[in-house]
Length: 88
Image 1 (cartoon, rainbow, N blue to C red):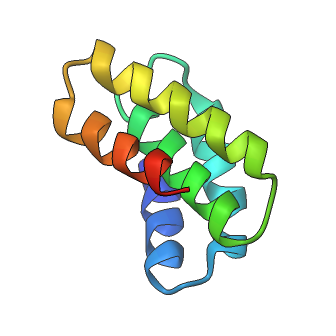
Image 2 (image 1 turned 90 degrees about the vertical axis):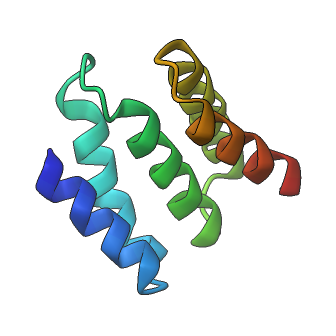
């Protein structure tokens, strides 16, 4: 899953969000107990939004990622997601 996350993140950084969707979707589905779930969900939400994809799904993924981040004590990530959601 780690390689898929890295691939997705890199594609987002290269402004190729449509190409980032598949690896991030696969990474998100690999392990429900993965500690990276909040980060991956947020990356996928950003990729969907930036590619003009399903905006409702992007919002739902980001909200779920925010809740997972809060539950895991990842306050910085939760705040980043809050800011992203507020800017949409």
